[in-house]
Image (tube, rainbow, N blue to C red; front, side):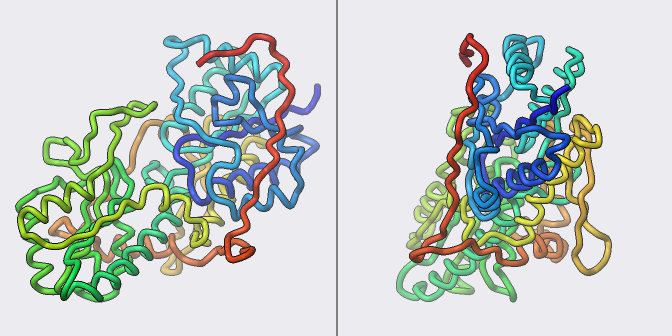
Length: 420
């Protein structure tokens, strides 16, 4: 029987270190050529499998693959496509099986967040239901840091570092100008239901009175009167106020402040525009001059100041995924386990996809200050190691020299195209 090939794909919002996980998968698979044939990457995630649009990573040099370690975004393209159940859409599953059989794919590595864990679980169930020999391993990735059963998620540490640095630098700018100019600065960050990214801004403060002065978490119901009073007190005391707001900030009834009424491919509410909304609210009440910014894609693509811890962990979960598959595991996810000593350490564990898919890990209440506008020492102790270390990419002509793969397609073997 010929060696089985592997399928690897990236899903959901990409990160500064998702390619480090890809590097971990491909380099580790190449070390086991006697057991794994080729690694095929799906062009644009699971869509690449459905449309038989596969990339032959064996055509890339060892140097190019290693260059993924310092390259942001998704080298093979990502997607937001949620597989329905086998009963709801059997055609998609039949197509996946056709493609896997045609290309002798026996290993399935899916790199993404909670919805991707759900996709990976369904693919593993497909193999079990049909008797096709397929091992599906989910590789964790999400800047939101909301996957359960892992201490933290690859991708988060680098975003946390970017937000903490940006908050500190912007606060110094505002403090310089507040006497005669800007009094309020608002930074809007990602985080639909979990406030981990917003919380990371709290690392910018080293002493009492430092920015950020207000952090808005999805976990704490927004109280307009309490918020406005805090803004006014802060400006009177310090001359300025820096606010970091999670896009998922919501009222007591669960309505998002930035609700747009639109949904994405996964059925999640489309959010955006919170910062200008808060700025206008403050302007109408107090007349303060303000500036606002939305970190948006900048926060998740900032590979130039990635956390070394994050890069190391992203590579490690990719490496572990291959190791787990080779030992015969299925429907699991490599996870990060924090050591118990005072000095930070971590190792790789494993979690069942049944316990990971479609579940969110929110900020624990003891990580949020009593007034709901800041973080506690416990949160700082958790967050600080995750932003540790600098993993600068190589620079050329003053700019990061990122890798661009050739992404050569695998010849199609199926005659019938598939429409999504």
